[in-house]
Length: 342
Image (cartoon, rainbow, N blue to C red; front, side, top):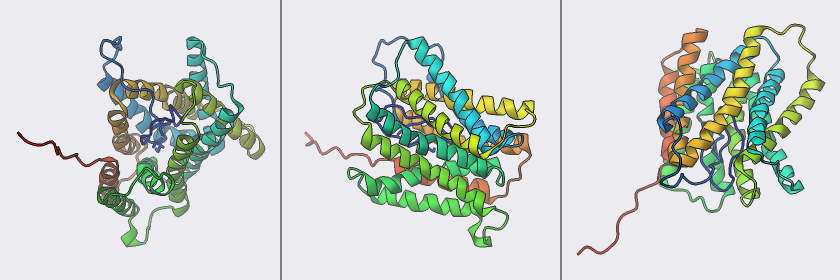
């Protein structure tokens, strides 16, 4: 999933960001929601929103496969830099086509630099390093824990988020699912602890960034595309500096890993954000954020079918528990109708 920050005035988990496109979770990891749904009578889009929803699920689900393939030919930092660079090109092209400008406020750029680190540079790099030692299926499932981290952090950092029995139960259920995926009862055997910790750390980074954006950029007047394009450019610069200092120019440029990096950036980071932006604007953040629950399913299917990754029973079972917990934390109890009966 690609994560850039759309309108900070709304918050919802990213799909995650997987690597997911930014939304204020995921992020968010796994979303920052653009404006409210289109009013009746607005121009109908060429593709039905259900089809675009399915495309977004596929793009984000395959992002973990693209990361795995990319790291087979390039260093993790190089994969991350390429991802951000190609994602930035897509967003900048949209800005030019729309004749929109980047934000002018130095304060906005400063806050976006912090958001770029937590929503893009750090989690994208951690996922790339994680997939050196863990399968893409596990990385995709770890990404699904982002809404759980987001709820836990929001209870501490956001005073308006009150703990409820339903949300606390979902949090506990979700982390029980994480332990199931990792095979806690057998001492986590067969799972690389460092790679898994990096993937979970990436999922934790998204809600940290989302909360920061929510608290600092809620009144920003710039468009979602302008904010996200700036954020992506800043993240590209951050990773570019580190990549130049810590890696050397590749001796060769293998085609398949290079194509995976291009797809990861242009599709999974740039194009996916635009898809998500349109979905949130048309059907609202609640429906759009449901993509979060399909991403690990697609990531697992892609890893097993195309990369030949093994799958033990506890992985899909644990993933279902994680998703059930995440869904429970995002649900809201129905309000009882207290109006007097005739």
